Image (cartoon, rainbow, N blue to C red; front, side):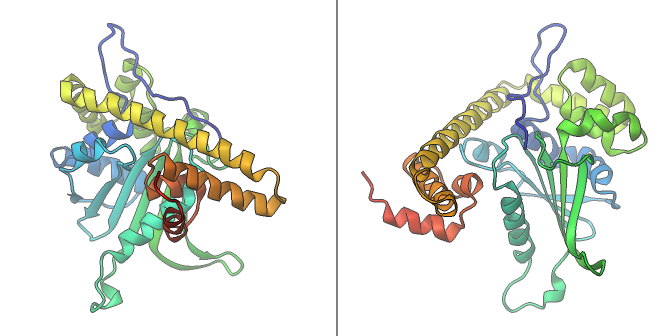
Length: 304
């Protein structure tokens, strides 16, 4: 797992400010707005390789409220015209429990479609699209897809739960090999570090050109810029607290046996994060402990 460069920035010839679409606040502001549905539809078609005629964005008006939450995950929940549910997020921080968290939220989204009295057949396909600004797997492919699958007999159980993981650091290694892949211009747009790179990506696809124009408009808004910069500060703050808690947990667990010490390290890290005021979601991401275990630890810690 490799570290990412943070915070992402866009360099412009005249020094003007443009948000990086790789920032999760800017990403959700761009792709999670009903006014930008055409942009989001084009993006989903390219990334998921499935037909998309129309979409409904769930909770599109909560963005600025959520952006003020230091521990909030700025994902975008979308229902396609076919009924398929899609959860999209871009992740800048390489927390160790990312795989567990993705599965947790995917299963929650899947089961949220049904009440106890309904037939299981009402459940629709649910897809998680996670774009990472770091390398998670030591394999060449940038875009990997996961379903329930019997590896021995090569039988797919179902496609109703599906996870797409895209690792942006691998983009530069495959651009020349996959020029006709429709997702490449979109990922070049997200991964851009200069205004010129944004414009180059925009030339490849009309909807990316619209996305670039919208990004510039968003960047000219003073309130958007304040929230964008606040989000960067929040992510740095949380990262520093997690790293400090892990370091203290490692020191406390070092004297124990290897297996017991690893478990104790995670528990100590969780306790330190609880004392630092982190919520269960952040603690789960940092330690991989279950929500039930974290709740138990909270009950054991006496408030000072």
